[in-house]
Image (cartoon, rainbow, N blue to C red; front, side, top):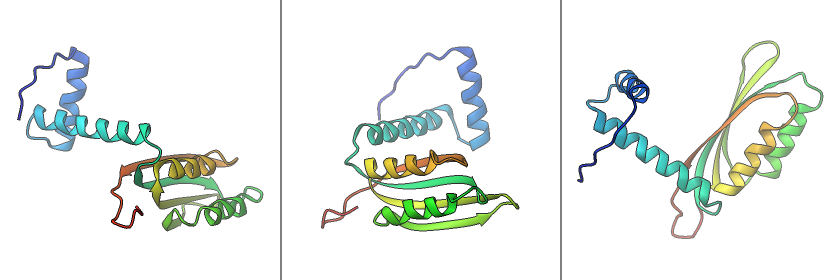
Length: 140
Protein backbone atom coordinates (compact mmCIF):
# COMPACT_ATOMS: atom_id res chain seq x y z
CA UNK A 1 0.00 0.00 0.00
CA UNK A 2 1.14 3.54 -0.64
CA UNK A 3 0.58 6.62 1.48
CA UNK A 4 -0.78 9.69 -0.33
CA UNK A 5 -1.32 13.15 1.09
CA UNK A 6 -4.44 14.95 -0.16
CA UNK A 7 -5.50 18.50 0.54
CA UNK A 8 -9.25 19.15 0.65
CA UNK A 9 -11.07 22.42 1.26
CA UNK A 10 -13.13 22.73 4.45
CA UNK A 11 -16.54 22.35 2.76
CA UNK A 12 -15.49 19.16 0.96
CA UNK A 13 -14.07 17.79 4.21
CA UNK A 14 -17.40 18.41 5.97
CA UNK A 15 -19.19 16.50 3.19
CA UNK A 16 -16.66 13.66 3.37
CA UNK A 17 -17.00 13.38 7.15
CA UNK A 18 -20.80 13.32 6.78
CA UNK A 19 -20.48 10.46 4.25
CA UNK A 20 -18.15 8.59 6.60
CA UNK A 21 -20.68 8.85 9.42
CA UNK A 22 -23.65 7.90 7.22
CA UNK A 23 -21.98 4.83 5.72
CA UNK A 24 -20.08 3.77 8.82
CA UNK A 25 -16.53 3.87 7.47
CA UNK A 26 -13.87 3.23 10.10
CA UNK A 27 -11.69 6.10 8.84
CA UNK A 28 -11.19 8.63 6.05
CA UNK A 29 -8.79 6.39 4.13
CA UNK A 30 -11.43 3.67 3.70
CA UNK A 31 -13.96 6.22 2.42
CA UNK A 32 -11.52 7.78 -0.04
CA UNK A 33 -10.43 4.34 -1.34
CA UNK A 34 -14.08 3.40 -1.87
CA UNK A 35 -14.83 6.66 -3.68
CA UNK A 36 -11.72 6.27 -5.85
CA UNK A 37 -12.73 2.72 -6.85
CA UNK A 38 -16.23 3.88 -7.75
CA UNK A 39 -14.88 6.75 -9.82
CA UNK A 40 -12.43 4.50 -11.67
CA UNK A 41 -15.18 1.97 -12.48
CA UNK A 42 -17.42 4.75 -13.75
CA UNK A 43 -14.67 6.17 -15.96
CA UNK A 44 -13.84 2.73 -17.38
CA UNK A 45 -17.46 2.17 -18.41
CA UNK A 46 -17.87 5.62 -19.92
CA UNK A 47 -14.79 5.27 -22.09
CA UNK A 48 -15.33 1.79 -23.52
CA UNK A 49 -18.67 1.04 -25.16
CA UNK A 50 -17.48 -2.48 -26.05
CA UNK A 51 -16.80 -3.47 -22.44
CA UNK A 52 -19.24 -5.99 -20.99
CA UNK A 53 -21.44 -4.77 -18.17
CA UNK A 54 -24.47 -5.47 -16.05
CA UNK A 55 -26.96 -2.66 -15.66
CA UNK A 56 -30.00 -1.83 -13.61
CA UNK A 57 -32.39 0.47 -15.42
CA UNK A 58 -34.94 2.03 -13.07
CA UNK A 59 -37.76 4.15 -14.43
CA UNK A 60 -41.18 5.47 -13.47
CA UNK A 61 -43.83 6.14 -16.07
CA UNK A 62 -47.48 7.11 -16.48
CA UNK A 63 -49.21 3.83 -17.28
CA UNK A 64 -52.23 5.64 -18.75
CA UNK A 65 -50.18 7.62 -21.28
CA UNK A 66 -51.33 6.81 -24.78
CA UNK A 67 -49.53 3.76 -26.21
CA UNK A 68 -46.61 4.16 -23.76
CA UNK A 69 -46.86 0.65 -22.31
CA UNK A 70 -46.89 -0.74 -25.84
CA UNK A 71 -43.87 1.37 -26.90
CA UNK A 72 -41.92 0.30 -23.80
CA UNK A 73 -42.75 -3.36 -24.47
CA UNK A 74 -41.61 -2.95 -28.08
CA UNK A 75 -38.28 -1.48 -26.91
CA UNK A 76 -37.81 -4.45 -24.59
CA UNK A 77 -38.64 -7.00 -27.27
CA UNK A 78 -36.32 -5.32 -29.75
CA UNK A 79 -33.51 -5.63 -27.20
CA UNK A 80 -34.46 -9.00 -25.69
CA UNK A 81 -30.84 -10.16 -25.85
CA UNK A 82 -29.94 -7.57 -23.18
CA UNK A 83 -32.75 -8.32 -20.75
CA UNK A 84 -32.13 -10.67 -17.83
CA UNK A 85 -35.20 -9.82 -15.75
CA UNK A 86 -37.77 -7.08 -15.20
CA UNK A 87 -39.70 -6.12 -12.08
CA UNK A 88 -42.95 -4.20 -12.56
CA UNK A 89 -44.57 -2.38 -9.62
CA UNK A 90 -47.82 -0.39 -9.50
CA UNK A 91 -46.94 2.64 -7.36
CA UNK A 92 -50.35 4.29 -7.44
CA UNK A 93 -53.32 4.76 -9.77
CA UNK A 94 -51.23 6.61 -12.38
CA UNK A 95 -47.63 5.46 -11.94
CA UNK A 96 -45.66 2.28 -12.56
CA UNK A 97 -42.07 1.57 -11.66
CA UNK A 98 -39.96 -0.87 -13.61
CA UNK A 99 -36.51 -2.20 -12.84
CA UNK A 100 -34.84 -3.96 -15.74
CA UNK A 101 -31.67 -5.94 -15.20
CA UNK A 102 -29.60 -5.78 -18.37
CA UNK A 103 -26.45 -7.57 -19.45
CA UNK A 104 -24.35 -6.91 -22.55
CA UNK A 105 -21.96 -4.47 -24.15
CA UNK A 106 -21.90 -1.13 -22.33
CA UNK A 107 -22.85 0.82 -25.45
CA UNK A 108 -25.84 -1.41 -26.17
CA UNK A 109 -27.09 -1.17 -22.58
CA UNK A 110 -26.67 2.62 -22.59
CA UNK A 111 -28.45 3.00 -25.94
CA UNK A 112 -31.40 0.85 -24.86
CA UNK A 113 -31.66 2.73 -21.56
CA UNK A 114 -31.64 6.09 -23.33
CA UNK A 115 -34.45 4.96 -25.63
CA UNK A 116 -36.58 4.02 -22.62
CA UNK A 117 -35.77 7.06 -20.46
CA UNK A 118 -36.45 9.56 -23.26
CA UNK A 119 -39.90 8.18 -24.11
CA UNK A 120 -42.65 10.75 -23.56
CA UNK A 121 -44.39 10.20 -20.18
CA UNK A 122 -41.42 8.39 -18.64
CA UNK A 123 -41.14 10.65 -15.60
CA UNK A 124 -37.85 9.47 -14.18
CA UNK A 125 -35.11 7.13 -15.30
CA UNK A 126 -31.65 6.18 -14.19
CA UNK A 127 -29.14 3.56 -15.29
CA UNK A 128 -26.60 2.07 -12.91
CA UNK A 129 -23.74 0.26 -14.66
CA UNK A 130 -21.39 -2.31 -13.20
CA UNK A 131 -18.41 -3.58 -15.20
CA UNK A 132 -18.68 -7.23 -16.16
CA UNK A 133 -16.20 -9.84 -17.23
CA UNK A 134 -16.66 -11.81 -20.44
CA UNK A 135 -17.07 -15.57 -20.13
CA UNK A 136 -14.63 -17.94 -21.90
CA UNK A 137 -16.96 -18.12 -24.92
CA UNK A 138 -16.75 -14.31 -25.30
CA UNK A 139 -20.25 -13.52 -24.02
CA UNK A 140 -20.87 -11.30 -21.04
